[in-house]
Amino acid sequence: MKGIVFEGTQKLAVRDLPIPTVKEGWVLIKVSHAGICGSDMTIYFGKHPRAKAPLVLGHEFSGYIASWHPTLPEGTLVTVYPYLSCGECDICESGGRNACITLKLIGIDLDGGMAEYVLVPFGSVYKAPENISPKLTAFIEPIGISVHSMRHGGYRPGDRVVVFGAGSIGLAVALTVRQYGANNLIIFEPNPVRLEVAKSLGFDALPFGPDAVNEIYNRTGGGADCVFDCAGHQSVIDVLPDAVRINGKIILVAGYKNPPQMNFQKGMMREFAIQFVRNCTRRDFEIACALTGREPGYEKLVNYALPVEEAQKGFDLLSAPSDAVKVMFAFE
Image 1 (cartoon, rainbow, N blue to C red):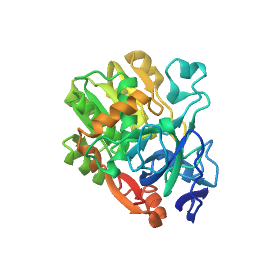
Image 2: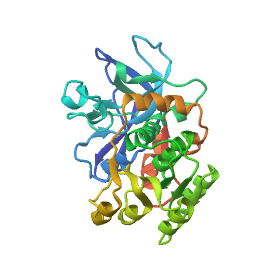
Image 3: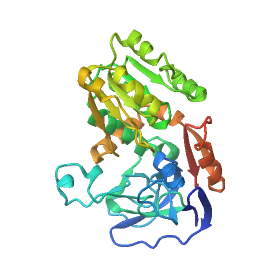
Image 4: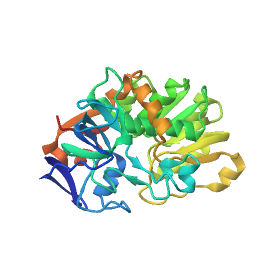
């Protein structure tokens, strides 16, 4: 089978690999589509603390059941919940399996979905919602991140919302909270192509710049109730304390490659809360499956579906400013 293998910092190769051998409690998936995530880019640039070469990348993917499964027949289109928790630590027992002390991820700690076949535990597969494409099915995990950001972040229907960053996660967050009543919502994004994508989805989308806080105040009357940082850049951190209203919430969704600095004195004066989010829970994932069939905007975010032979092009698109929002590889 063909697979996209991380072989070292900024080194990728498309290799012929053996099809994984099925083992007890695991099922073989014939992969349809696999997306590039921000964490895949972190691995590619040699910044991930756990991922080690050689490694088949990919934890956002869809495919078809290709060996025996206790509840799903062969040929069923599925998506995969890629987080492998121990189920026994204090965190898992309190409901936080997405942040298990020994958490492992398919595509980071073991070979992932950027290959023609991948092996996953029985309990990690979820049947795709009816009438959605295999490409959109591969995007359910990022939608799960947006659901977790909303629920864990403390968003309440009707809250005034600002989203920084119109990448795939930022736009997924915006689409998700809009489904739950966020009608006063602003997106800031410096990339003009992504800005147009946000506008095409019906959002009030503005270029990020020095006037961002003034724009927020003009549209919200004192700052946003919930501010989602989906950009992961120091320039955004600099304005977050002023973008959120007194007693509001800042939800940090993006991963930061370098530790940022924030003006905590403003936090004390404005009493805003900061909530970090990590991965998504199984309940978030189930909600994401249901949302996927109701919101056609999610599929518009996947604007590249490349053949596996163009693996390097896919990563190059996300290594520098481009028109890419979500890049996937098609294995069908």
